[in-house]
Image 1 (tube, one colour):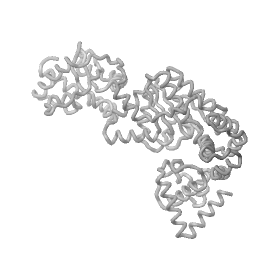
Image 2: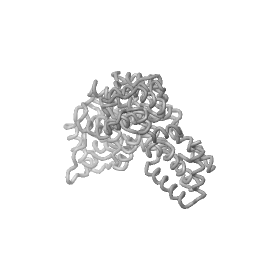
Image 3: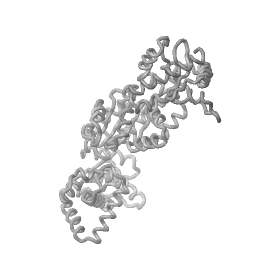
Image 4: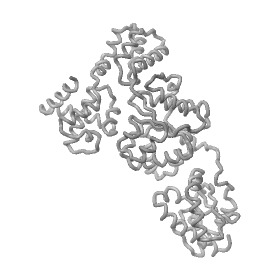
Length: 492
């Protein structure tokens, strides 16, 4: 690349190119994608720009190479073009020189002194001789470290939740067929697959079944399955450790990404932004995305319009509440897996009585089987009613958390939206605590499930609300009467 003066000129040109690109793409995109770019030398009249990973190389080549080529041509018409290569950063020496820092750094603070130019010349020569001869579009094999990172991020797939163990009926036949098609197709047949429905209707089962089938049939495909809450945790952790590039590469280099309960990213702008870009990057590369939520894309609260629109682009499959026939079929399938003889009348009774969700239905059957096995009493209709008395009573009431929120909001003259908001004023917080308390008393929902219905709050918040209401009831007779009145109205 010529003399020291020539090298200094190249450094100055590189600094101007970066400055212009920075002003064009904005600070966020510049920091994410262009800060790691370093000047690696030249080959056959082309300037070589190095990035530390293959993922970054592909992204920069696809999104910024053409513009870099134009900007460099304006700076120096003799440049034949730009080549983006992968060059992992070298381990820092104990006492790095100024030239080493310049070559490996961001390049924003370019210096044209003779010393810096000479240092750059030496480093550039070494870079030309040692830079890997990698095509801008070559694809390397998945590294062991990347695979290990995905294993740490991805939730474990339950081997019991297979397609073979999923009972199909009219309420879930579309979701099942779509999930099966995705698991068997070599490329994405529709993207994304968006599964939605109430709690315990089979969304998570289908996502596990997709992952298990792909791992069995094509184990080389890279899969990440996790909840939206864990996605948020990983993103926040990457921000805190200033390691967002590793986060981006882990999630955007997979073949199949499955995220459960995506409604929990509502209202979290930074996480939504990152999820949106991850989603776009995967769909643009025809990588499969599978999403689940408790509502359809258009009904997701606190989610940006562009995100709702994107989520609805592929196939949206609703899993409807179970019918009696489907519940009975599920119970019969599970009963066959048991070593005990369960009378048909017991199964029919459960299918009639427990209508809320499949998870609760299977839990009831497990309790009956466990009681029969451990205690040794025969499984009869009478014994079933005795063992499940609390669960049957809760289902007889059929009080929902939504009904509780509406009734409590009307009683205390606050908006239903305040039940989900972050407002902490006592006029809002106290009714919210009462609604949480009544949800714990009048439904069979777990503390985490109740917390999610109140704006994605933690289960410890629900525990605090229950304790607070119980304390106030003991010391304030007027408050106790209010809560008791609400309870009677809801149970009526």
